[in-house]
Image (tube, rainbow, N blue to C red):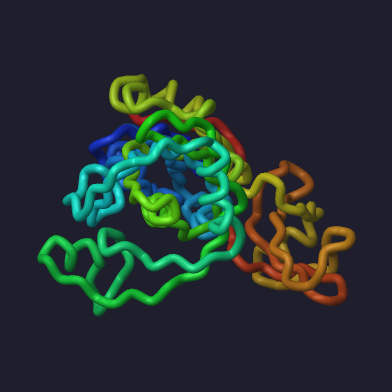
Length: 306
C-alpha cells in the first residue's frame, strides 16, 4: 500500500479548509497533503483530502459535481450572503408554498451567470476579494458562468427554506441564496450549509472531525481510499508492462477505450498490479497520451510512523 490516497473528511464549522489540511498532515505525518475544493469556515460536510501523489489529481476532483443542502433564512440580506454577515436589509416574509419557492428556483437551473461575492477567495489585483472586503473596499467583479444541475425544495417552514443543490465547479451557494431571495421578493441568506457530496465521495463515508483529532493514526489510514477513487466513473485504460513503461516515459500508447473521442481524459492503470499510472488524454489513432503521471511506489506494506 502506498501513501497516495484520499481521506474523505466531514469538516466542522469554525475551521478553514487549510486548517483541515494542516491537521491531516500532522496526524498522518505526511508532507504532501491538499484538498479538492475549498469549503467556507461556517460550512460543514465533505472535504476530500488528497495524500501524497494523489495531490496531482486535485484539479480533476475539484472539477467534479458537488451537492449541498442549504438552509435559507428569508427576509434578511447580508453583505456576505450568510447570516453571519452584516445585515443590509430586512423584509417581511409572505406566506409561501413549496410550489412558489420551486418556481422562484427554476430560472437558476442550467447554465447561469454569477457575480463572485466580495467575501470569496477570488483574486483581484494580487489580493483575495475577502481581504479587500474586510478593509471595506468593494471592486467590480465580472460575472462567471456556472452550471446548476438541480435545485430540490425539501422544506418550507415560516421564514426557513431548505434546498438541495447539485452544481458544477465554482458555484457560490451564498449567491444562489441571495438570488432566490430576491426572486421571492423578500431576500435570503444562508443559515446553514452542508456539502453532502464531492464527485464520488459522500458524507456517509466521511471521517468525523473527532476521529481525525483523537483517533489512532492506523484507524485513519484504514479509512484512506485509493487514489483512483478520485476518478471513479472515468473511462479506463489498462496497459501491459511494455505499454506501461512507454506511458511512464511520457510517450503515447496505441490503445484507447472503445468509443472514446479525441480529447477525453481517462485513467490509466497497469494491467499487472492494477496501480494507477496517471491521467491520459485520448488522441486520434486511437492512442492515449500522458497528461499527469503518478509516481507512487508499487503496492506493498506501509510502515507507519512511530
